[in-house]
Image (cartoon, rainbow, N blue to C red; front, side, top):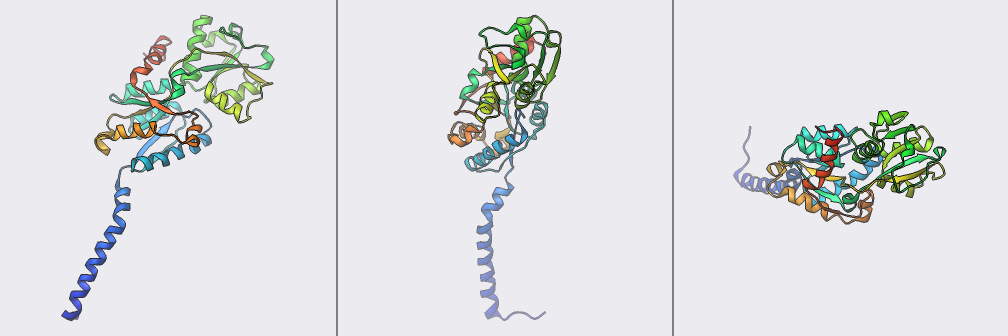
Length: 300
C-alpha cells in the first residue's frame, strides 16, 4: 500500500486528532448520562393503572431533571408486587401506603420512609353505602352495616383494608367474614366506589382522597352512593427508599432524592397525587400502622 507524502501525512494526522477530540466532547455528556444506572421507582396500584402511568410518568421526568440521573417509573399489578419489586431491588424508591411501606421496610432492613404528603399525617377511610340500604351519615360507627354485603379495596391496603377491618372488629366484635353476608376485595379504591355505586355491594371502605378526587371529576353519583362514616385519622402514604442507594449513586444521593420530593411545588404535578405538598417522614411515624396490623393478625 502506497504511503502518503510527508507533507500531507502530518496535517491529516493533526486534523484527525482534532476531530476525535471534538467528537468526544460532543458525545461525552450523553454517553455519561446513558452509562449512569437508572433509578427505578414504583407505586401501589391504588387507582386505575392508566391514571397511575400518567401520574408517575410526570414524576419520573421531574426527578430526572432534579437529580441529573435517568429515573423510570415501572407499574405493578398489585400491592404485594410493589413490595416484592422493592425487596428484590427491582425498584429503589416506592410510593407506598402505610401498611405496604411497613411490610417493605421489614423485608429490606435499612430502608427508610423519607417523605409523605402533608395530608398523610391525618388520613381517613370513608365507609360508603348504596342508597338502597337506607344508611345515613353518622358520627359514630354505623353498626347497621352488619349483615350486609361489604367490599374492601386491596387486601394489602391501609385505607381500604387494614383500618376498616380494625374498626369492624372493634365495634362489631367479629371478623368481617362473620359480620357480613358477603365480603369482597375490589383491588383498588376507584373500583370500590364503582361497585358500591352500582349496587354490586351494599357497603364499602375507600380512601378519602380518591373519593374526593373522583367526586370532583364527576365520577360519583351522590344519589346512588354516599359517605356514611369517616374513621379517626391515622398516618398513611409515604415515599420509602432502599438504604443502599448511596452505595450505587454516591454519598448523599438519598438526601438529594428526599430534598427533590420536598421541593416539588408544581401544583399540576402535586394535583395528580393529589397532595398539596410533601413533608419529611421517618419510620417511627408509621408505628401505629405496625401496631394495628399486629392486632388484627396481618403482621406477626
